[in-house]
Structure formats: C-alpha cells, structure tokens
Image 1 (cartoon, helix red, strand yellow):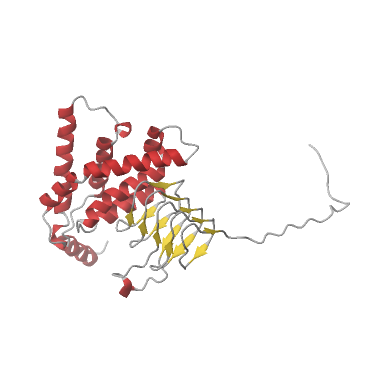
Image 2: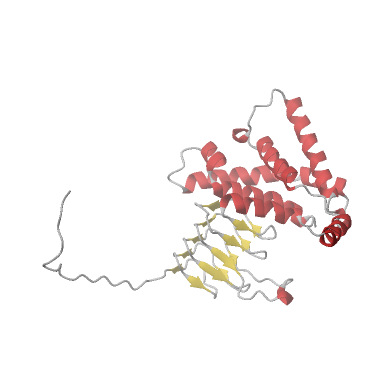
Length: 277
C-alpha cells in the first residue's frame, strides 16, 4: 500500500469518533433476549440474584455502547440506558403477545418455545421492538445497526422508526420490507415478500409520512406491495398475494390479483424418442 494513501487513511482513523463494536452490540442484543425469554437462554440462571446481576451488566454494557454515539446526539448515555431498562416490562409483554399470536396463527407451530427459538418472524419483531425503544429516545445509529443485523439473519427489513402495534405476526418473513413511517395496528399478519413502502424516495420527504397505514386485524399475503403515506388499509381487510396498491381501501375489503394464465398442449410427435435404460 502506498505510504501517501496509508497516511490519508491514518488521518481518517484519527478523526473517527464512533466507537461501536458491532460484535458487542449483537452480544448485548442476544444476551438481553436470553434474559427476557428462558427458552433462548444457553444456560439457566442459578438464582434470582444471578439474573439481577446479568440485568445490571446489560445496563452497563448498553451505557458503554451509547457513549460511542454521544458526540452526534445531545443525550446522556447513563440516563438513556436507564430509561431503556425501564421499558423492559412492557417490551416483554408485547413480545409474549407476539409469540402467542404467531403460535395461534400458524398451524405448523406446536408450542410457543418453538416460536421463540426458531421463527425468524419472532426474532425480527423482537429486534425491531428493542431498536424502536432506542429510536424513540433519540439514539442515533444504534437502532439501525440492530435492525440491519436482524435483516441479515432473517431477510426481514423493518425500519426502527415504524410504529407497530401488538400482537403482530410475520409468517416466514423472507423479503418483508417495512418503511420508516409505516403505522401498523394490532392483530396484523404479514406473509413473506410484502413491501410497505414509499411512492417516492426524494430526500426532501424525509420528515413526511411516506409509508402506508394498516389498521387492526389486516392480513397481507405474499408478494403484495402497498405504497404511499396516504394509503390506509382499513381494519379487517385482506390483501391477496402479488397485489400492487397505492390507494386506500375501506374496512372489511378483499383485494386479489387475478393472473391470466394460459396453458396449451400439442399432440406428441410420432417420432418422439422413447427409450429405457
């Protein structure tokens, strides 16, 4: 490597103030989930004191991670970490409801422990809800790193700024995209490949609602695309697979995409080769 280029890189490294080891952030995330959900714990806690010590350790770890972004946002790392820990009872309530809703809605699920341990939908929702708490508290960068980590693991891309009620069910999940200003009610179910996106991605729209609203008890089937900040899917509606939608629909609507498929068959030619081995 040329010395002049190496010198330039060294200057950039000296200027860098971001100190967020991604590995430590991901370790924090997974240890937090193990505290919240015993089926995820690699080893059982031997006492309530041991559980409390782990919770105290996690709060200190979060404070250390938050210190890495303090220079780009006016907040106290210690106060923000404390506020996050205070949200955990409600977060736990939400995620338990999500897990049981997934169990209820998926005939393939046998018990809630299976949902917690092996369902990418539950993992994607859990990471989103954790990131959303930080996002609402004004923490920069960390929420997006968390949701992109989940995106890489599950194929589910949920912006931490989206507002999602509970319980919420993601079935399969691969290819789901939920944009920043999306609003989703309770008892909503999404299948794989669903996009809740924007009609335009112009930069001036960053502070405008760009993504759709789904009211309570909506079901969106695989491959559907719903776009636009003014698009509202009314409660109890069902949007079929591969539907492209940019307009609002009233409650109790049923929308389906009807593909035109033509099958033709010709007679087999007399000289078709027929052989056996």
